[in-house]
Length: 267
Image (cartoon, rainbow, N blue to C red; front, side, top):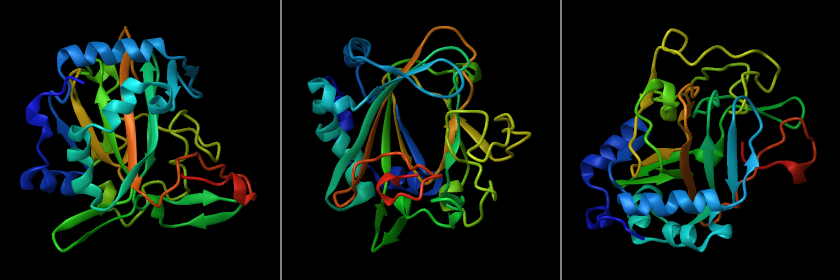
């Protein structure tokens, strides 16, 4: 794995400050250009399925289980240097996937510290404990951290960049009080309501993150986040590695309409 030696260092105090206050941190040049090319070829080699929702996007599930190359990447010391200072206890990989996005694909805003969680019919939770995060004795303790590694440039708004609501990882109130953050894959919410466009007119604290191929973006899953609609040509490829404390089970999507406890998972 071709990772520049500078990326082997643990996070600095300033980087920890930025992650704590912003809920994310971009690491420029995390992979070398040669490593990016190898990773892109590997993603294209693996079988994928069409992701549900709006626009054209494909998903490679269980990236680490299907590729020794990405298993090596997930276990690399450079990834550990990003994750360990944010979880600060024994941790494990709970999900891994790759996304290939083409025209019109979108990932709507989802998660968020204060968002309403609907499950099991009419049940409602006001706090999703699966991505809680605390600070004790100079250390962060995050329940769910994800490392996104860009294998394509995302430099313009029409490339469909990552977006988020500023401060939403620390929010105590819900932006979607009816629980309509729901599934990230469509313009219709879990409750059937149409969603408004992802613009600053509709979301005043909306912010975008542009990235080059090889950059890594470390995010606190408590952020209310998604990506803008991709209107440009070509494909956008990224990989995602999700980490949590070692007692957390593998990620699976919650079925909010089910009363069957066996079908409930992460939100």
